[in-house]
Image (cartoon, rainbow, N blue to C red; front, side, top):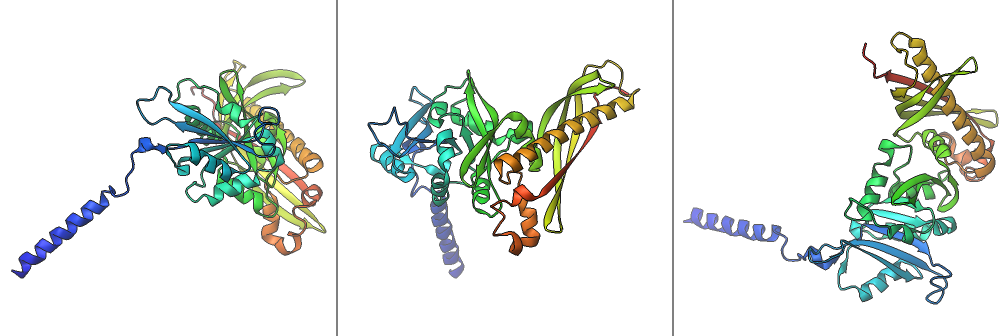
Length: 378
């Protein structure tokens, strides 16, 4: 009898657990929720919005319409407020749906806002517990709200398009994929400064145009694609991309083509008297994907060496030019090497690391290229 009672009790307990595990007590139809995929952040337009508010933000949300009965697949909703939090308050007053910020995938800063300061936006995103740290960030060339209005073909909405563009940037080009966590860390730690990819609309497409360099949370310059590649490689960001080359021998062009390479890098720092010397080594490894010279590289191994040396020399010179620009014009460590000095001499350097430290150090760079495959039959 006791065994029978025990079995009945066990069955009752299991049934209760199964009911609670179903998660039906607080369930809500997904069609009743407002789920943002992209958030765009701009300063108020002094002309267009002058009668609404004189000083504040325009926060633009891209919301997919989850109900199959709606005609439009997406809603693009700009809200104006003095702060990001106030725009959410305003949105709640007029929205029939539950706002779910945890589904935010991408954040786009308008250029004017980025030049002023994005610290308040970053702080708000970090304080919203449901927003994930892997939120991808970028700067729009111009205004974010204008970019988010652009229709895209062959995609559900512009949010899905931007998420793929930013998430996979490093796998196909020398553009960084920067998350909220990475930006936040680099904007507050001594000696560190964040970077963000810059995007803009070109016709019916959205493309990368360069990299934005920040001094802490303020955009100070935009780099073109050539300088952006040098910055990416000098920061030792792991990526893959294509590099064109022209081989010159005896003042004559003997070959031209393109290599596809992945990159890696190392940094070494040593004090010399009162100075510091940084040695950056960049290694590029990959394949020759095209070249115009018809002679077989298998029969001319020295030609492959010429290509490797040409690519190495070109990238090395580009990096040296960028280092000079960084030290003389930008005057911030945007190649992320100060941390190596701080790791060894923090007590001595912490007070000066964000002042003129990067301007005074000596930075050497060496590039090594190794092509493993020429695409030719042996």
